[in-house]
Image (tube, rainbow, N blue to C red; front, side, top):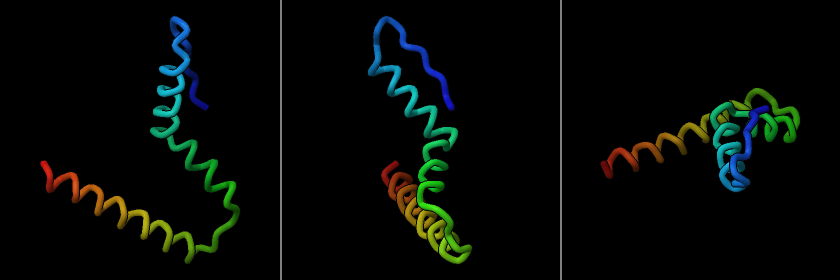
Length: 66
């Protein structure tokens, strides 16, 4: 679990930093996956493939604009 310190009473900034740290280390994704329970290997593969396709399209959209 990530640790963030509140400086000068800026709770909103600390919360933002916590969310960024959790996103980078993938802890929120792991928690979500555990909450969903067991997935059969084929279902997990299909889900990963769909997610990778979505990310690829998103990256292509950003690369075309640049």
